[in-house]
Image 1 (cartoon, rainbow, N blue to C red):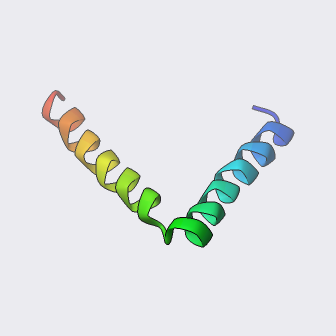
Image 2: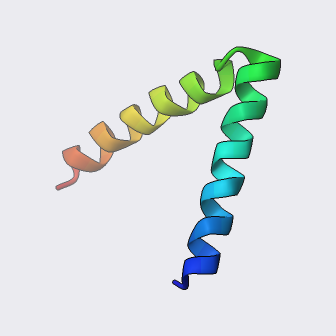
Length: 47
């Protein structure tokens, strides 16, 4: 991954978090964090 690609991905992620904060009060980020936690527990079960 080049530096330009990393900066672009970071800007997209931060932009999405900013929109989620301003428009939805972090509801979507919280939902995704909870689902990611459930996914990690599911993966750990199969380990």
